[in-house]
Amino acid sequence: MPGYQQPGYRGRQQRIEYHDGMQIPPGGQIVTRLRLGMLIPGAALFGISYIGSLVAWAISQDVSGDVQDILLVPVVGPYIAAARADTRSRALGAAFTGVLQTVGLALFIGGLVPKRYLVYQANGWELSPRAGFDGFGLDLSTEF
Image (cartoon, rainbow, N blue to C red; front, side, top):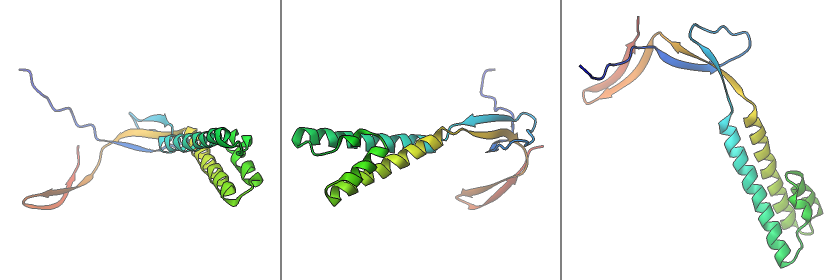
């Protein structure tokens, strides 16, 4: 008779940071992951700040041509433009753009460094909260 059969209990999957020399339990494996929590925001921050400086440079070239071409150089260019700026507001804007580009690039590079994890199925005691219409409490369970 066809129907749904509940899969066998394998235990909870655990993931911990792997260090060289750690013992790998039976059925465990080492996985390598990029740090997407740093990679994606870093790329977005760098890209948006660099595109913003390109747009500011392009508009300035059409209007008056008074924004320095050094602003086109990523990360270093805004700092040089800030040092050469003729007003404090331009210096502050260029320095702020430089800080955003630097932080974005640092996050992006940090996200490219892979992190190794040990993934395994853990059997043992499990403590979980329980809540319902008749009250609440904690459930303690294990598998043999």
